[in-house]
Length: 284
Image 1 (cartoon, helix red, strand yellow):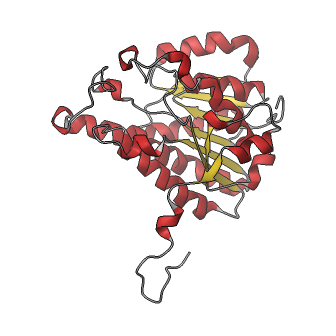
Image 2 (image 1 turned 180 degrees about the horizontal axis):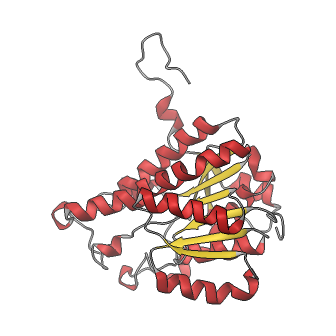
């Protein structure tokens, strides 16, 4: 997919993490300019040093950004447009993981009394509101130019609904629902919205050593790049309102066929078909 995104400008949140680094590298490799956002300044510096040669002059912009603040998201979008010459692609990848609660959360699941209210608020602010804030800050420009791609990283339905896996699961379920709503809202206006998930535990620091899972059996973070890059391309623009399971992407196939093999409707469309509604059906 080299150079298919030449002339495009992307924002990636959570850019210093395991998946974020792979997405930034993939987008640069495909020819895009990238604004890499993260709250981890040390991680951003390491990312810039790692990709300096590949990025070349003026193609990578890093910014410490707390996506749990709308003001910071708005400022980051403005700076990205100013420094990189526009904005076309938004990848909402930033998230807080369960290790913030405790590192053995996968072998000894978390109970509600262990979650302080401010911890709950932080998870919701970053894992749900952060993507809304970034979308809200970016959407006027995307719709105004009649072209844009939004990719939201959620999680498996199992993780969303798992008992004692709060406060991670519920905000990700909210992000899935938000993605479905935005796909409908922006449909036909040149801006697509899709979801990409690893499909299972990914080999990133969000799954700590204390999990006991064999790291060789996890989804590699690099698996996230092919579906995201395809969705950001011209070919991917025919699709909106879908979720893609990166762990099922078959790299031996051409991208369109690989996408078909790991694609499903976003969210829970079957559950939304028959509401009890005056007149029989709500307006679309």
